[in-house]
Length: 283
Image (tube, rainbow, N blue to C red; front, side):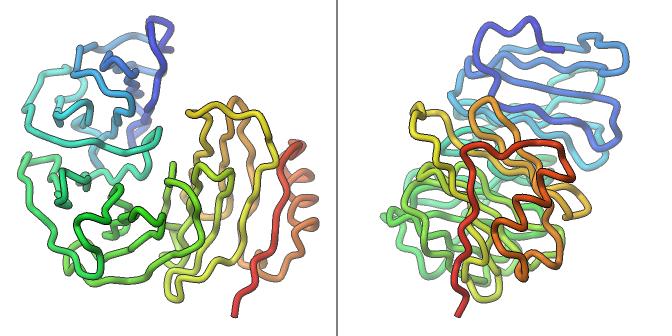
């Protein structure tokens, strides 16, 4: 699939029903495919954006695109454009940070804006504990939670409907490239441009483990990206052209870092060259 792109593909999504795959590149070239036949269903030239995002609706009936300053909604599989509305930067630093299938939350100037994919309606979110001038980026997470990062790289987490502040995660030294809410609703996973990825306790805001890359040669766009399996038992960490599969279960906190590496290598057959795990103190 996707051999007809001329520029870097930044976002790919597989529809929840498994019938469609969509991808978009940095110049806004959108493609939707039938993966069973590898047939191109439709294409569209969206506004160019360095970090666009594609995400299917929960019922797979529509494809949503954030690219440039616009949000698009396409019917599946026809590709009919349902609406094109003012959107916002889908993310600040590479890849789909957190593809909530119902909404996008992004920074627009000094405001935090929520966009409903289905209706195209927007609303401003007046959050507490975060001055507008401090805002760096935002992302909608699955599970009715959204995250905002400030200029000191702390991550502020809020309940989407009530705007209740849930936690503040402190410890990153660069902008985040990925953030995920674990399916158990208790953990947050982040990766950022300081070569680190972390597992946090949402209730306390404390780090449980950090995954540190020792890779020295990295380009400015060579970020780490996280994804977590639906059952919550594995995480997938991509770094450059490599993807690592790491087990993540209830025994994680009791594991020594080397034991976790050994288990990961035994289960996946992958060698975690250039990756080591550092245990974080939890007080």
